[in-house]
Length: 532
Ligand code: MSP
Image (tube, rainbow, N blue to C red):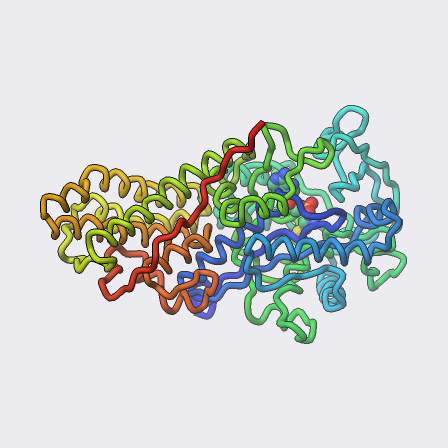
């Protein structure tokens, strides 16, 4: 019963915890924007939401990055972690928890979790031999490597040979249980292509993995043997649990699990799927904890067709992008233009074209020209038309009545591009409707009632479009709602869920002539392509 209640009323989700070897690039921002859209959507539905993000600060990768900059790992972590916080602010990310894995409360939780796994008999000492990629913080199979022992994900980096005593986690013991999990919860790993990857990997047979290191001191010491520090991934995954603690709460597993566990959704990139879909559930099984609802692995961003990365020097600076175009534009482009789950490209001229076409022309002009006509033909008031005056088969109403449910399904399935497309189809139908109905001619012919019906139907359709797009473009949607006379700001989530509940605002016919319309003003400035 409690479980059912939790699923309906609350929703906890995570972004990965980002490495602090460098400042965030647009790839890290991508997952976080998507997570914010999901969080905002669930808040619109009136659910309590916990969006967790943060930084992963231990391990050799960070230690080496700090050494190469002549800094201490802690000071590098402090600076980079702050960089993520400020980028999230610029991108209008409304997160609830920001966990840093160097936090003292995290150490307490890691110890307690380790103790449980230790008592379950799932940890033993052994010899670790193999090729290690520091950039991935992962051992690689010989057969996975490129020529010259280079990592397939970081082809400019050679992997390093390791032969050392480590503590191991008995992953192999959980092979059948994991297989049963994937079978009984087919949605546990999404999309389907990633699920298949994991199934193949697990079906090949699982090997135990080492959870400690001896050659590095930038990490928490292993309680049973302080010569070892915890392997960064063991520590990092547990960050999701620590993040559930209330601020200043005593750091115990019991407290962490009390309110929000199990987490409903982990959003990650495809490169870290194995850790989340195999290691993490096995660790949780060992500690006798329930499992998260689903793990979604999205694709990689490329630029002008090439994989984006520091090595190629083609990363996109998210700060420069936000400063130039604003957060809504960036959020919209990445969510509308890239199928979540597939790789997707950034190309500046396409970026500009999409924003101009969808936000400036289709949506922006529609609102602007309709409000101006209302001013001219209806004295600036919402036409006194009621929803009942408009037949069900009206071209806009018939789309509008179905749209809310349709868009809800797409947000739930994380098919953000389809959500945007569906809303855009109402916007485009509205522009076409105005052109066909030509209210300016109807007005000249003295057909005032017909003019009012046309304008009402279009205004109402813009309202609905703004509402349904508000998780993606909260600033623009708020601007539209304000011009339509609603005192609603979609960045004030709790108030919005109360004043504009999804159950009512997702339907068609909400606008009434009690609304006092605002002055028409452009909601999105057309972008001029850079001159070459
Ligand atoms: N620290 C680990 C995660 C630990 S979670 C308990 C990590 N960090 S990371 O900073 O390297 O990557 C974080 C996320 O950014 C990953 O999901 C990764 O897929 C994503 N991206 C990094 N580059 C990317 C692109 N070019 N495109 C899209 N996402 C990419 O892994």
